[in-house]
Image (cartoon, rainbow, N blue to C red; front, top):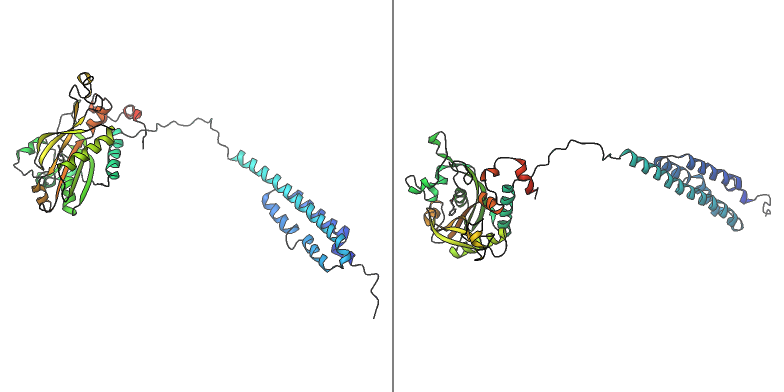
Length: 367
Ligand code: PHE
């Protein structure tokens, strides 16, 4: 048996020699110092700290040393790796800070540079109120319906119990669309949307329809040939005038605030029976005896005209294919333009459609 080779000193395995470890460490430190971008540092990390880097490989050699040699060599390699890791972390922080500063400088926006100040525009109050009213109905579970502005004469009149010779046709001064044989009109009210809906679906029906309507009125401070209405129609089993009143009271409260009620006055519409004009309790003076006499909004009346309404005439139900024995319903229609002019004390209706941005601006860009 040969004696152990006393010359062989495993501590001196080449990659573990003190000068060799130092060389690896210095090479790593140099590479770290030279790297000037996050990208470059990534590569340095792979080369000098990664699993296949010289120091990592050296570290693996330690396990093969005799136990008495491991401690010193372990310390040597460990210190070198520690120094490299520390330098890498410091350099990374430095380079990141520099890159961050550079990005800040590059992406800086000079807020003092003059820009073209385009006017922003504003939502028209009519759009705002139409949306607001639509929201109120949707919250009650109603649907919003639409119809065309150029409408068939039959839907605008006949289906609504306004036959060709009905005297009430003259109540609505109508724009006829050429050629006459086409029998088309600019709709005089939103009520044809009722007929369209009943003709295409079965009850229960709960719809609201805000929209533009046309009549041959000379424009003046209180009349316009184009104006806006919102129509409501409910058809179901067992609906009565009481449901109509409740719905309108809710609508009044939702638009004008708590305590705003409605009153009915007997009236006539061919498509409803019975029919009523609906008035709104004056939302300025609330018909308060101490104020009403001087109230500019209701002019001493205590009530403001709002629209027309009634229980749907069975003749309309029949014309539109709804069984009047089983179903009944109510309908109402009110002007939106006057709602705005009276609400905001606008003296001249024409301001609403002049298109002057100075008029709409104070209403803001409300959503
Ligand atoms: N369409 C009627 C008008 O424009 C209003 C109305 C609608 C009346 C529905 C009763 C029922 O004057």
